[in-house]
Image (cartoon, rainbow, N blue to C red; front, side, top):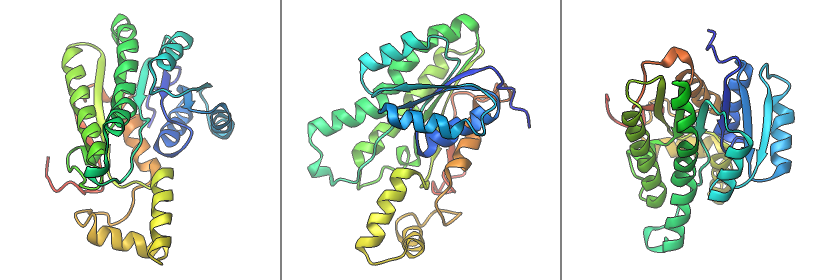
Length: 263
């Protein structure tokens, strides 16, 4: 299927690894021009070089901590014509509620929520001028089913869903769509590192840990495995294409059925 993305300029934050990398790879293979973002120049350069082998669109790099306002401003100054904004950058960490101090609550909100809010604020006027654009917030099923082991993370993912819906209302009757995408447990770099550490601590193989995780921690999963980053990327790339012009204001789950709901 031709997603009609050739020549569209897309920004994927946090795209040197994991879900962001998979999204950037799929977009570039579909002909989109993609801005790769990571915190270090080295990681950005490595991702651009790796993606170049399959890309048909152009690749650009931007190194910087996108969770800061100064870096967001600099990114906009360098690339003012972004048509597709994918707010993917995010952090997570299992921590008991009593141990989450004020600074951690602020840090999670800055990285997971305000980073996307700032960029949307920058690029929305450009999209309105063109009467076309796509904004995606990579949220999580944790925004619906708040995990007790990382409540601060779940809070930010709920906030992203709210921001995306509100922005969609704001651009009603235009050629701009805004959606959130809610992956479930996904085998991204951060999750893989976490799983490997937990498996080692418990004296299990990765296969044993995965089976135990979906039996006891996420028993509502219907696929009974971690999703791949490419499976998430496929949905995201469709949603930002012209083919998905009737889908806006939605929270699209790619959670393997973890959320026990028909809606």
